[in-house]
Amino acid sequence: MLDKVGADMTVAQVMAEIGKRARAAAAPLSIAPAEQKNKALLAMADSIIAQSAAILEANKIDITNAENAGAAASFIDRLKLDEGRLNGIADAIRAIAGLKDPVGDVIAAWDRPNGLNIERVRTPLGVIGVIYESRPNVTADAGALCLKAGNAVVLRGGSDSAHSSRAIHAALVSGLESAGLPRDAIQIVPTTDRAAVGEMLKGLNGNIDVIVPRGGKSLVERVQNEARVPVFAHLEGICHVYIDASAELDMAVTVVVNAKMRRTGICGAAETLLVDRKVADSHLVPILEALSAKGCEIRGDADVLARFANAKPASDADWSTEYLDAILSVKLVDGVGDAIGHIGQYSSHHTEAIIAQDEKAVERFFNEIDSAILVHNASTQFADGGEFGMGGEIGIATGKMHARGPVGVEQLTSFKYRVHGNGQTRA
Image (cartoon, rainbow, N blue to C red; front, side, top):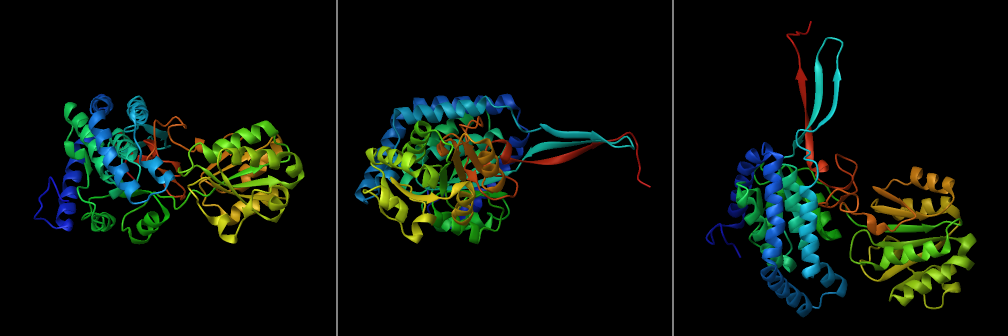
């Protein structure tokens, strides 16, 4: 389907036109005052609610198609919208509107002995391409965050959520127009042809400044392998929870169940549980019983199998698998050092948690593990820009360049230097 651009155009031509329009929209956006951007964001949130019936009707089409295709329950959960989730999407946009505008923020300033004053100031990145799969809420999150940071954005959602994403996009465009901002500031690719992704990865003739993929391993691998522009990405969310010998049992049970079962299909869901052997007799079975009661399948090493009859044997592949389902791999370890070693071997550098009262164990865990997010005595499912007070996120970046962890409005900016003088010349 190629609409709004011309059915007689090739995918390459359609995408080139989208890139050209995005670059044109980025210029006025970069200097748009905070008040105008916030007006657009608040109007977007209102439009999401006003158009909820149309959005939910579009979502029903996507859900029916997914069910007919035999999609897993966890996949359908990621895809599904209802009144509560739409209210959550609108609230997230309003929260983004309430954030401090990052554009023009002076990050640092200093004076030189020669009298020069130097400032490092936040600036928009320009045009951002976001490629995502089954989560239609990403359409709103990405559009709102990019707008707040003064960027134009080209959105390419998955075919599974195409109807939902287009309905949400229509609400976003309504908000832009009501605030007098260019409608091309937030564009959605009007085709599900995979060739459109290839065009984005080429950079749309130099018009895309950065790509943000948000989806499964195959999508992110393709983006990382083929992109000719910078990428903010995480490949997988293989998140670990370590139960230290000093952990309080009730807390451990509550946190692990939430980390795994609150929503199994998100990248911050726990996939591996590590338990200190010293508390295997007291902590392991209560935790696994609580998980099993919620419908979680346990895959354990030999020590776990010996203590918990309902566990299935874990294979070598389980330790490096992002299940995104009600499945958890479980292993006994010999203290925090052994846990750190296991995490170092299998982690995707997304989020790891330690449940402990021993401050030295926590300090070592935090110091020696190289993941984007480290959590103490709390669920890994807090690995979320909204929960960090960022108003939302475009994804979790696990690389080390430019952005790491939740990618919010500040991470969607670059910076420039402003140098003020009074006639200085260099010898």
